[in-house]
Length: 98
Ligand SMILES: [Zn+2]
Image 1: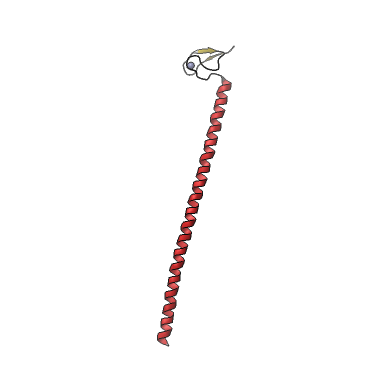
Image 2 (image 1 turned 180 degrees about the vertical axis):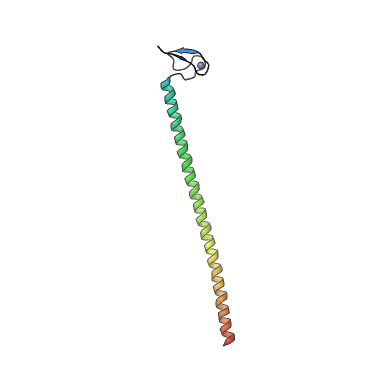
């Protein structure tokens, strides 16, 4: 026989897993199981949020790579235009000097 005082309402319960007044869990075993379940849920949630973080990071990374590619493309076209202008001037100078 075990008498446990309910931590919620203060009623003494004898050999009960749940308080007869407020149904609070009194059994140490059940409490531990519930705590373990909660812990497991927390762990799963954390793992899920971590996965989410990674996927959003990957999205950001792809986005960044896309931006870098985009900028590289623009810079290359600007460079090509400069080269074309430079070649045009070189041709112009040689034409004028010739
Ligand atoms: Zn109670």
